[in-house]
Each structure stands twice: as C-alpha cells, then as structure tokens.
Image 1: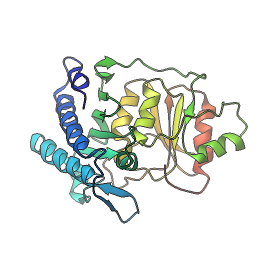
Image 2 (image 1 turned 45 degrees about the vertical axis):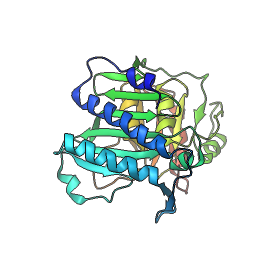
Image 3 (image 1 turned 135 degrees about the vertical axis):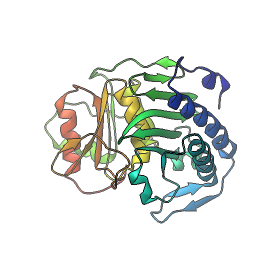
Length: 280
C-alpha cells in the first residue's frame, strides 16, 4: 500500500474510525503480499473463489478488531456466521477482499471493506483499495473522505454514466426512459462500484439480487455521508434502506444515487427486481 495514501487521513477522527483506518492499512499490506503472486485458491460451496490472501486478511482483522472491541459481533464473508451475533448491538461487517476474482486475476479494482454497525446501521467505515491508491473513510455525522480529502455532497448529474449488470442494461431498453444507457467497463468490486457514485464518477449504480451485507455496509455509510442513498429493492418494487446484522444478510436488487435523483433511475431498479436472475 502506498505510504503517502495511508498518511493522508482526516484530522480529529472518531475513535472507532481511527481503529478501522489503522486496521484497513495493515490489512492492505497483508493482501498485497499475495497479490500478483499466484495465491492458492479454493472454490466455496457457492462456486465463488477464496484465496489465501482473503483468509489471511480475515484472520488479521477478526483478531485485531475484536481484541479492540470485544463487545462487538463479527460478520464476515470468510467466517461462518454465529447466531449469537443477533443479540449484539454492535457488529463488524467485513469483506476481507471485495472483488476476489479481480484480486486473483491481477485486476486493480478490489478492496478491503470494513464497517462498524450499531443498531443495524453503519457508524464507521473504511474501504481500502491499495492498488488504486485510494482509502475511503467515513463516520456518521463526520463526513466521508478519500485519501484525507473530504468528499462533497452529491447532486444528480445527468452527464455522468450509470453502472450495473447486464440486467440493468436490459431494463433501460425495456422501460420508457431517456436515461442515457452509458456504462463503464465491468467494475468487479461491488463496494467500489457504489463508492463511485459517492466520489462523483457515476450518476447511479445498480446490482442484481443476492449481494450480501459485507459487500455493501462500508459503502452504504460513505454514500450516506455524501448525500447519496442505497436502496434494497424487493420484488413488487418496494425500496428500503438496509438494516444490518439481522437474520437476513442477502439483499434484493440494489440501487444507489444522490438523494433526490430523477425517479426514473429507481424505476430501472424496480424493473430489474421483477425480472428473474441473481448475482451482481
């Protein structure tokens, strides 16, 4: 991880955010030991890959964060879920490597996603993307930052592209909308795709159903602190904010955009939600 990125941190951070920032920096160094080095890879039961880098980062973060906050529950993609987490008011929700296929393949768009959730909503978040040289930090009411620079609050910007899966592109063609169907190339990290709305690179972002809480919790807070919203859109079109560390960790179609964005953007997500299929 570039040391100049780690050094550029916002001043007077809340203690919980300081903890996540330091843990994310150390975890990035661990991840980079395996990146580009043909790490050992296994296939999980859902046919998704996990590498030795994922497991090393997960082990470090679990030990470090729970030692610092022993009252918190642990929710991670690479750790078996424990139902005792449901009685904890606070929980860490972690994706050790968001974008594992990209990480294994030598792609630069992957990150370490860490959120501290209290009463179902994220209160501190870190998304560290070491190859990109970008560290995103946010705390509730404190703001969101990239490499120490405060991110401005977003407004709808029609000139920017939207990003999402093929199902989004189909929806744009099937409903009556003049939303320009532009999109960048595939963005393998869902957390980073969402944060691209917060940092002003995208107008809106979408994901098909069956994403998990660890994919989105950190990005959710970064979005909220920049005037954006993340919605879980169910079949039938009901759109709601995400409540974390519940008995449901899988989500429906996801939509994010600046608050007050053109309603037809949300209509795209509703159309997606009424189609079949899963994945990102």
